[in-house]
Structures are given as C-alpha cells and as structure tokens.
Image: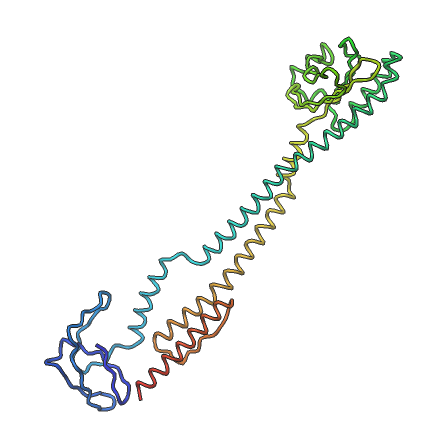
Length: 335
C-alpha cells in the first residue's frame, strides 16, 4: 500500500501483511515525522498488480521504474491495434479504385459508342457521295469510270472496300484497300473470283428499302457495311469500313505511354497526400503520447503543446488541463 508523509510528501510502499494488529507506526527517514498506518480491511489485489514485500519503513521504488513498467504495459496493449496510417492508406486506395472504376465505366460505355457513331456517319457520307458520282456512269454503262471511282473510294482512310453490284447481282466494280489485312484463305478466294458477292449478301436491302447497314464478318475482319440503292439503275453500292481499327485505337489509348504517365502522376499525388496526412495526424499523436507517458512518470511541470488538426489540438488542451489539475491536487496533498 502507498503511504505519503503528511509533512514532506515523501512516498512509501508498505507491505500491509507486515502490519501486526490494526495500526502500525514508523518514522519518515526524510523529515522525522511519525506516520501512523491503519491496516486495510480484506483488500483483494488486482490481477495485474504485483506486490513485493518490503520491510517496514522501506522507501517506495523509484517513480521512474514503476511508471516505466506501467507505460510499457500500456504501450504493449495499444500496439495490438491497427495503426491509423493503415486506415488512411486503405481510405486512399478505396477512393482511387472507386474513381478509376467510375472513369473506366464511363469510358468503356460511352467512348466506343461515340466512335462507332462517327464511323457510321462517315461511312454513310462516303456511300452517298460514291453513289451520286457513279449514278450517271451507270446509266451510260461507263464501267471504266465506275471502276475508277470505286478504286478511289477504297483508298480513303479507314475504308475496307468499295463495290458496285448491278441489277443482275453481278459485281461490276470492287476494290479492297489492303487485301493483306485479311486472312490467307480469303485472299486466295478474292484473287481467284474477285469481290465475293456471297459476303456482301450478308447485308441485303429489304423490299421497298433503299438503304441498309450491318456489321459483317469477312476474312477475319469485322466490317461495318452500308448498302445504298442507286435510283433508276437497279444497282447497289457497298462501302465497308474497318471496325477493328476502332478497337485497336481504344486499346492503343489505354496502353499508351500517356495513360501510364497519367496513372503514375495520380499514384504519386496519392502517395504524397498519404504521407502528408499521416504526418499531420500521427506525429502530433506520437508527441502527445510521449508527453503523457513522461507526465505519468512524474514530470508534472512538462507542458502539453497543441499541434496538428483541430481535434488533436482539442485533445492536447484537455491533457494540459488534466495535468494542471493533477499537479494542483498533488501540491495540495503535499502541504
């Protein structure tokens, strides 16, 4: 049990089991005051409190030793929890993944649709222009001019082929922009028989319709085909554009150096924010913990400084008020 001298305030640790009877007396070895100790009634020791029997009049162990042991126990108990830096890191990672997922969803949902719409509009414009140019040559059966125009259209960027089919279903003009982009079997077929009508028939005009569009498979390529009927001739114009180029362009954007650079910048900014947040929160907490431990060891004149965010400053202010209250209580007891 802890006994404090009423005159000088010196502390003594007295083993209550050494007290014979209800009371015991001993002299303070600092000021000579006689201290009377009453034996407590059947006090059950706490499980974590270790009692060391000492002879009567032995001075209590140094405050530094007992305080250090208590501080170590508290530190070991607190170290079992997850550090606040982990919570901050998980919060930043979760936010990064949510934002990246949202941008990815919007990108894959709307960008391909916008690009495909542009392909459809471009193909439609080329087809209408091509059919208008060859309308008169078809009426005059000027197939040389028709082939010349079909070859010119096939060389336009993104165009896979341009073909003209007469009212009897015969291909009177048909050119590919780059036949090597198709598989070997299809290339051989084209070299032997020319433009395959069977492939173009995947996109047919319905009765009473003068315009139709479809995505068709041709020689390992996916083609956006548009067919337009040419008035007064019974002929049809087919213009196909590569759809695979859109997919390749999107993939090239996603895995481009610019994308990785932007991603690296975002990660770097996130890391810097993590470091700043961690320092702004954990450093004041560690300082406050250190001050609290030193005060618990008896350094009652050590002031608690307010630093960090508002909540940490409020906590430091509460610790400072508690320190002053404890210091005042000890001074009153020692008088």
